[in-house]
Image (cartoon, rainbow, N blue to C red):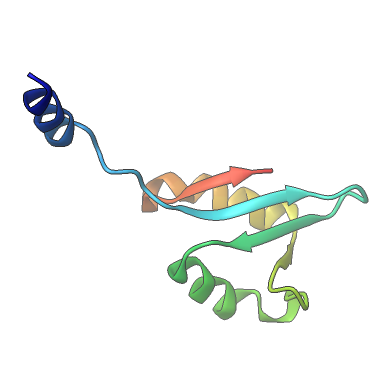
Length: 82
């Protein structure tokens, strides 16, 4: 019975999608964007080079965050707010 349950769970559950970006609101009303997957890092390197911080995070504007969160579901991306 256990084997059948495991088999059915494996067949009918969708694999988890990776979280692409983590967005953090800072104390001074800034927004920090962290790229968590290689695809997200490549995108950020292409579009956010000048806003890169020494620790690898990126400073982002509200407009950029709105664009990412509105287009994320279309691309199958997951975005997490911290």
